[in-house]
Image 1 (cartoon, protein in one colour):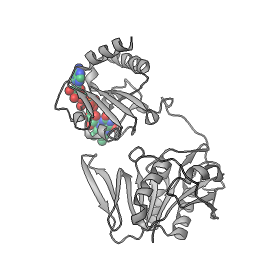
Image 2 (cartoon, rainbow, N blue to C red; image 1 turned 90 degrees about the vertical axis):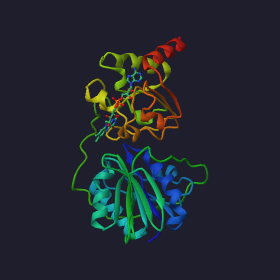
Image 3 (cartoon, rainbow, N blue to C red; image 1 turned 60 degrees about the vertical axis):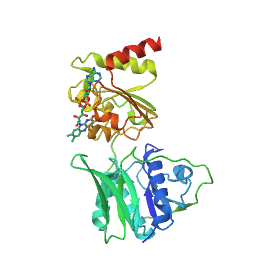
Length: 319
Ligand code: FAD
């Protein structure tokens, strides 16, 4: 078995951004994995995504037409199993997402594949090597998959760079797969509370942590500061646990992974579970009164200072 198969994700007629991260990750391993990278999309109208999926380094886009308008796990499972049988890839890449968790592990178990979820880094050493957190992200585990001809890895969104197409789009091949459509049916999309904010998309994040103290009213002040500065407010978990801020704004292992151009962390210590969600930001600026705080270990710029003094100075700068 050789080559890499990426399974695209779509929702409500849109390609999900994580797909371009899967393609970029696959491209890094392509030469070692057998010099072939194909991207499959299973959707009611797969042709709508073909051009975007034929990114640089992609050899072919495989288009599977589904009988269902929206994602159904059993349909995706059948499509992926058929694609693995036909294409015989050495590595299959899926997003570690709510949709793919509905069928990826099942495919791996049914076909006796190597498997790892929530993968944050990849390498190739005579086969795929996956890096993921262990013991609540306190340890970094490197996994290989001896004796497996094919391995399925689910990659954490925001942990890999993205890609765009600059050259010619890859050729598209329609793949006919017999897909059953009656096992479950999509009813409706329901937005979570606070769903108006998608911190994962923000280019500039102002994040606050327990350093803001015990006064819930401070959150509104930092929300205004973020707005004036053109940033999106995010938080560490204690502020969500306290019920001060919606979970949609939590960064970290049990929150969201963000990858902005700039991440400003005010009064956040830098616990491993928080770092898991922001360490790949392009520029990290940390403000913390404790010069030994672990956040300074990942920060590009740091100030051992009182966050309220820094916030006040910023307010004055902004006029
Ligand atoms: P603290 O660790 O209490 O740090 C507060 C910091 O503020 C300190 O460093 C202090 O020096 C500084 N400070 C205090 N006053 C000031 C001031 N006036 N000016 C400047 N600095 C000041 N956490 C997350 O954030 N996201 C997650 O997704 C997440 N998931 C988790 C999952 C699991 C399974 C577990 C066990 C934990 C998880 N946590 C998560 C919690 C995590 O372990 C930490 O407890 C949490 O990140 C700490 O948040 P904090 O840095 O805001 O608070």
